[in-house]
Image (spheres, one colour):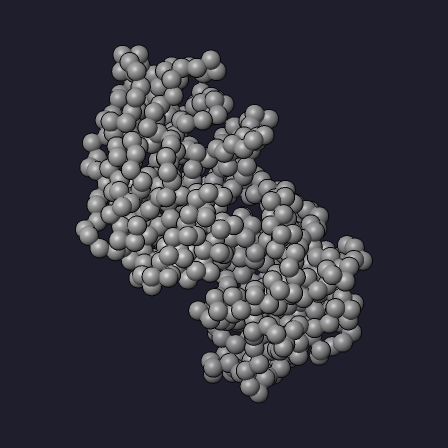
Length: 560
């Protein structure tokens, strides 16, 4: 096997990548060499370091006399040894242990497989802990632990739509059939592996993810700000060339067959934490009290939280624990997985439960305080606490809380103070701040984008573009609507910055307000929670809930 490492920039990242591969050599039985393709780097220290490594015989060095770009550099590397399999390995990655043996084993688990992609923190479909999300790069020690756990979970290869070029094992037989990368139509980098994988699939080849390998990937070292232009140009080529690929990709994401493998690795992490209390203390970022926040919407990606969701045929909860390396995330279907949820929470350091919403709250969750022996309080953002119904005694639940903090005067809870012994707190916080007349420079999208609100936000983004207004809309997370929104040029995704909380990232992006286009907001309205968390004004359509919370009417925005 030839491990091909294209190099242009990033001295420290590149040397860390090469050194990790050299260190792992003795752990792999697969005969291989490291082929570094130096693409006319502008960093003299990097060029010198590569020459030293080549002089010692540790790497095979190819020097491009002029900058050829990723596609031509990789084609040159793949043509170097016509009889060998190849692995693309980005210069901003880090490998560990017998990574190559395991990756090769996945690629040869079936004769129809053309490529294999490992788990990573930043690698599209194979991203962990959440697919299609760019997570911060773990340290070498954290990655080694994740890779060892992945190896021991023994998860089998999973069929995926396309591989990802940060670390891609490709069989020579597939290369001979499919051909090399398209140097003519694709702009220098990004999307080239998608084109190759789709071309291979059209010829009967398949691609797999290898969830028993974990390769760390930083991302963004080689191309920086140029990425967006290349992505847009190459995606246009791919849409024309493979018109049905997008629909297949979306269907794959909805099925999410990689999820069982992600869950297996998360449960292995949880078991390791349970066996090592000292490790749990080191990895838990917060000191002091460790509250578990229960709600119907997740606004802060750095909190210990339990979020419930409903659809037409099931109810499930998502648990997130903000460990220092990568978040611990697990889903549980209710009611069948409730016992597993309780067992999991007993392994984590929760010392208070905070119910931030009770609207459509699964009543099983109300049993958690008694089962865990943990006190709880109600800090509710709902305009109404639920009244008694046939399924649950909500007044008794309120009476056993240590305190209740209602949402201003919108709280309607009949005779609550007379029927429970807990302390009823009044919310004396001032009304949400209001902006002076003018146009905010950056506004956070405060809605969960569905078919209705997504179209409304797309129309607004296009309006901002047409009017050339100096306002940027900030999206808090990846959604199916993100790409068409970004295509307008007025929407940006909040950057995923390691160790930064959601509020810190929003502040760094210059967020000055939260905007909701929801016509009639109900309990669990995410825009209100986002506004309160960030301490910025909320713009919304007029209505009972919005008026009670002190939201500024949307009509006061200059572009309304």
